[in-house]
Length: 196
Image 1 (cartoon, rainbow, N blue to C red):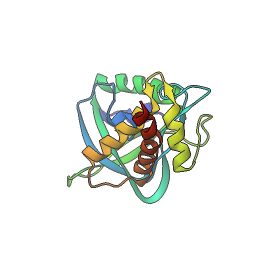
Image 2 (cartoon, rainbow, N blue to C red):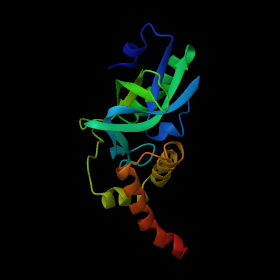
Image 3 (cartoon, helix red, strand yellow):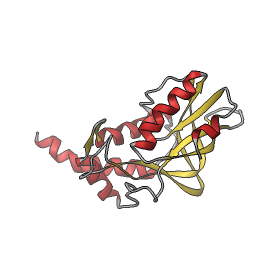
């Protein structure tokens, strides 16, 4: 689905972030809301050879995997007027060109409200993407994250900021995949930090 198809005839657009967008949207928006989408689980199964890694050592970043009876928490940003075109142009480069993500329309459910869901645009990397890495053990993912660095910084930062977002903004939500990788990473780097 092309972003233009989603925004046609609309005066505003919601964009759902579940990875680095939750702490670093880097585009102007009218407002943001924490909430979730249904039918997807967050997984560190996508490779990143620009922002958090390189061609020789791609970092691991999150994508969404379809699965019934699950939800993924994140932040939705409402963009209006000229912000719509500007944000989509920026995100096309950040997520689609450099990251290989595709766009989909999803229902976003704001936290703690009785409001109906709103349609939001989300970026998802699929197994068809050449830098899609797929599943690996918690320890393998943590080890890869521990050594990768790209143009936007170290892959460790990506993991720790995402875990911090979940603890601060969604304290009642458990994300075993995310938190188990964080624990494995900290166990991996703790001896290095203690030796320094």
